[in-house]
Amino acid sequence: MATSPANGRVVVIAVDASDNAMSAFKWYLDEVYKKDDFVVICHIPELQTLPLISFKRVGLPVEEWQKMMEEQIAKINELHDKYDFELISKKIPHKIKSEHNKSPGQGIINVAESEKARLIIIGTRGLDLVRRTVLGSVSDYVVHHSKIPVLVCPKIEN
Image (cartoon, rainbow, N blue to C red; front, side):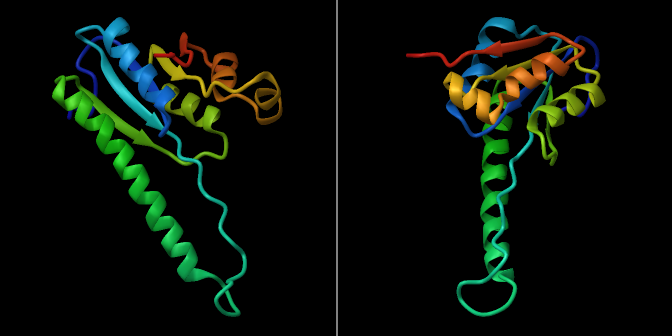
């Protein structure tokens, strides 16, 4: 669709393949979206760890790497297509930005800054206290490092 906002605000929506991300996206569309919004779907894929040895033969596992990367690219394209379809069907101007960053939270902040966003929408993974403490929370990182408002959508139970 459009590649830049004509006027109005730029809203970054951080997504991944989770139901929580889709729930936050739909909540934005139903409750927050304004007619002049320009939406930037932000996806910071977590890259898989590649094996260092081949289990089929001695040497580098190039074939395994290629297969894993092709599968990951297919999943990323499928995710992008899903959000693209939703926004096109609602005639909402948007673009999809996918970048690699070792920290998903920092990647979201970088996209928001480069796009001059005025709002970030993000879902939570719904981790319990122990897992959130050990693994860290992307939404916590974004809230504490963003210079613009962040709307965090909790997991919505049906």
